Image 1 (cartoon, rainbow, N blue to C red):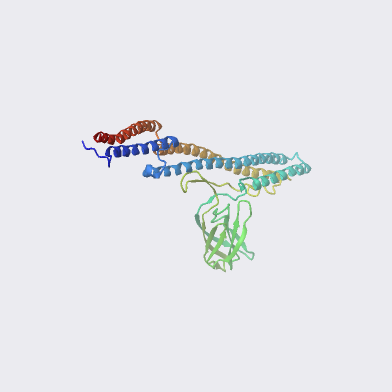
Image 2 (image 1 turned 135 degrees about the vertical axis):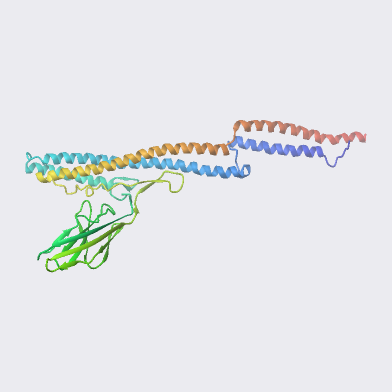
Amino acid sequence: MGLRINQNIAALNAHRNLSITDIALTKSLERLSSGLRINRAADDAAGLAISEKLRGQVGGLRGAIANAQDGIKLIETAEGALNEVSSILQRMRELAVQAANDTATDEDRAQIQKEVNQLIAEVKRISATTEFNTKKLLDGTITGNVEARSASAEVSANERVGSTPTDFITSATANSVVNKDAIIQLKVISDGTNTSVVVSMATSTEAPTEVTTVAADTGTIEVAVGSGTVTINVAAAISTDAGKVAYVKVLGKITAVTTDNSLAFMVGANQGQVVKLGIADMSSEALRIEGLKVDTMLNAQNAIGVIDWAINRVSTERAKLGALENRLEHTIANLGIAQENLTAAESRIRDVDMALEVSRLTRNQVLLQSGMAMLAQANATPQAVLALLR
């Protein structure tokens, strides 16, 4: 037995083990008090990185659910306004039917017209003022995506003409909806000697408006319509003096540029996971009821058809909004499931198992007490040397 007092190896060993136990006990207390297995990167570097990514996903899903819920409220705001527009149109139709009956006098129709005018004004007001968080919903500012498209047509006209120029209307040849129901129309004018092409733009609510006129042998012309560009290639005209026959060949090609003024609802945790919404223009002009007249039987008869068209347009838009609202409700349910599963995955990595950690705490507490006792015994061992000095 070697008795050395300068270096107490047993005490050093007991102190080292006691320090290890104290560190383990401190970590157990930290985990139990925070509820987290990973409190710092040193606890589990890889686990921390994974759990932080999962936390980002969970937070994103939480925000996506809120976004979808806001989207539903926006849709309900728009649909509620359109519901009132539908009611107004139904009342207007009732009035038009009443005015279309010849039992009504001109004075009666004049009174009916006053109510119709007020109803039209209310439709205009609703479309101009309906908004959600200051965003206008029904005035045509969020009509949605205009898909890129192209169309081409070839028109040939053999037109016998006299001294008076004769128009050849191509019956909406080369029509293509490029933006907000914009339509290109070509009108070929020939007097037997000279031929020109009148390029016009029309909409569903307005008569064609002349855009440009070009001689038939000029070649390619371009017309900008909304967000699209219309290119029309005009072939040379051939005229015969004897029969006064003008032959005109028009090649029309229409190409629309894609634009998108939709509202985008961020319904996912990652970039690009959006649902888009476009709402057609619901103004009185777009519904073709602006200036609608029921002051005569004929006007009232015509008004019924116009109002039927407007009712169908509003109903179609309401159906689209309802379908999207149902979609967002399913989206919210799916996001909730994904959030729950990702939260569980993140919890398994980062959260502490309380039962396991309590058992470790108990073990470390016992080791700490026994370690302190052993350190006291080890410190007392050198005192045995005193027996040799007596």
